[in-house]
Image (cartoon, rainbow, N blue to C red; front, top):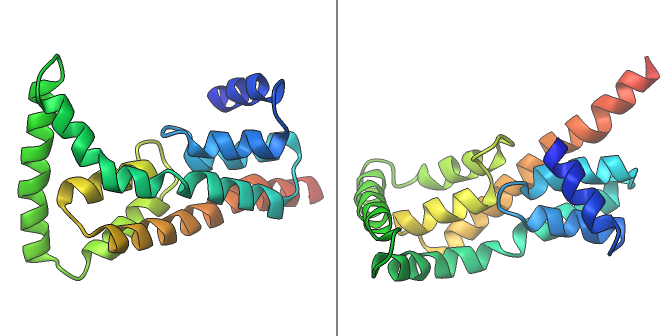
Length: 170
């Protein structure tokens, strides 16, 4: 929570709260989870918070899906991350082939559920990275990630808007 508060307070000096929420939701570590928390801290109305968080979280995803393999390939050409990048591509490609062979129909659902769980290390950015490394089709991956982000938005809406309202009412 302190990371969200720090980023929010810094950005609030320069842009309006909806823009802060949008920008926080674009960040790979914070994503929609951080955006919804920031919106609640700003006292933004739920519909505005939801829209800014969803748009911010989904905007970078097509670019991640389309370009992350190229970025990893560039890292694999040399430098300190070369061996890690090569390992990542080898492991992802092999794992993707096995998963598509064993569970061709459930990969979409698995990706969707992975993105929907609002915990650190899960989310749209990680889901896009996984989809790209597994070699999943871009449109299918994007649809699973989008549905997962909507699921995460539902969970975060409950945690940041509904439950606090219920606690205040009691």
